[in-house]
Each structure stands twice: as structure tokens, then as C-alpha cells.
Length: 168
Image (cartoon, rainbow, N blue to C red; front, side):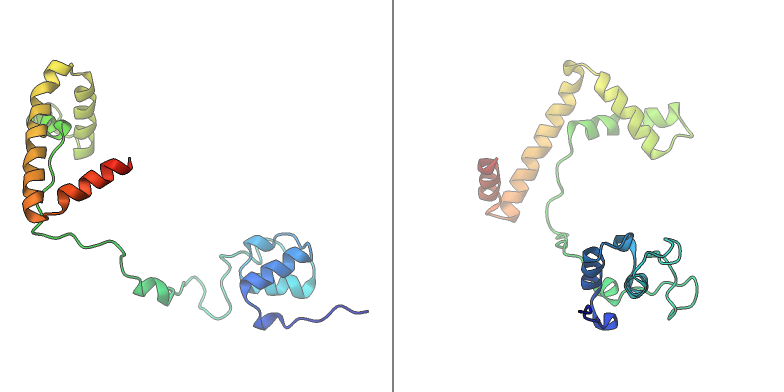
């Protein structure tokens, strides 16, 4: 009894991979459509270089990639930020960083912004609680300002915040 012949050209890539797995052919998981077709037609694995997923397809010019139309038309799922919403509060660390940034720039004139933030972070961690206290008070005051402005902006803000806190 002969095995049924498949018309591979009409099969989906998922089905081609499943068939290659069923036939216990090696190297099928990393192949593109053309590589899978060659593998299934020959019945034995090709060299991985010849049928790699990055191999240039015969339909496109060498070295060019065609962008998927789906990727071009995808819109961000993230909600747009309302420009009228109150500005969030700053943490104590950021208040501290604001206060020492000019000093750090004088001390390290060639330092990049990231390096200044790293140095500021190291100094922040080395501060005692009493040295951090004024910045913590500033942050708490700013947080109260933010919550007050948010409750005026969105009357349900405090209710939503309480629900989130109850979930945790």
C-alpha cells in the first residue's frame, strides 16, 4: 500500500511543520516555507545554510526584505495621554537629583546625563535617613498636590485608587 501523496504547495507552514515532525525529519523547526517544501519533497534534511529562514526567497531581489503589510498598519494599543491631566509627582530621589545636578555637572563636566544619574544614585544610596528626610517631605507634599489635582480632574480617581489598593 503506497502512502498518499500530498500537494505541499497548497499547505500552510504550520501543517508543513507538523508533517515534517510526523515523518521525523531533522531541522524542520527552523525552516521557512521554501525550505520545508524542499525537505518534504526530498524526504531528507538539506544543509541548514541552504534552507535557513534568512535565505533569500527566489521572488525577491537579493538582500532586500519586504515589510509585512500587517506591521505597517498596526496602531499602538496604548491609550494616548491627555495633555490636560495633572503632572505626576516627583519621587524623593528626583528632588535630590535636581538639587545636586548642577554640582555634579561642575564636578564632572564631560559626564553624560546617564553617568550623572548613576553618580547621583550612588550618592542617594549612601545618604542617611535624616539626610533624605527633606526630600521625602517634598515628595510627600507633591504627591498630595497630585492626588488633589487628580480628584478635581477625575472625580472617580480616589475610588479607582482604593480599588487597586484593595486588590493588592
